[in-house]
Image (cartoon, rainbow, N blue to C red):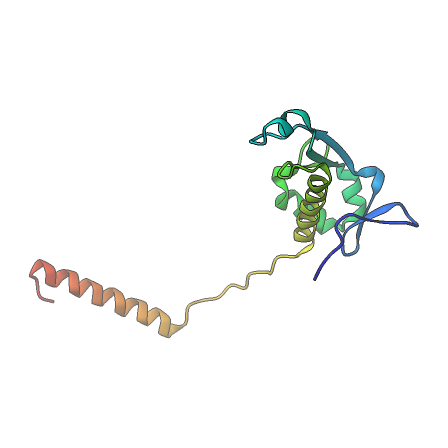
Length: 151
C-alpha cells in the first residue's frame, strides 16, 4: 500500500502525512544547511541537508491521544524542545532531502498509530515441563559418565 508523503490538499492547506493524519502546512518548518561527508565542492557550497521541525502541539491536534503517547517512545531520538526534528542529508538534492524528511515523519507517525499486540500470559504444558526435566537428567547423566561415575 502506498501512502502519500507530503501531498498538500488544496482546499484546507494541510499536508496528509499518513492515512487520516493531516498537519497544517504552516506547522511544517524546513531549514537547510550544508551536508557533511564526501562530495567535494558540492558539499562545501550547497545547502542541501534538510531539517524538518514539527511542533508537538500540531501533532497533538492531528493524532489520537494513544498515538501521541506512543510517538514519544517510537520517535524518542527525534524529539527536541522545539518538537519533532528530522534531518536528511543523504542526497545532493535539497528537494530529495526534503522528501526524505517527510517520508521519515510518515514512517514514525504510522508506527505510532500501530497499537502493539497485548501479550497473553501462557504457561508451559505439563508435557513440555516433563521434557525439560528429562533433558536435564539426560545431560546430567552424560556429564557424570565423563567423570567416570555411574548413576
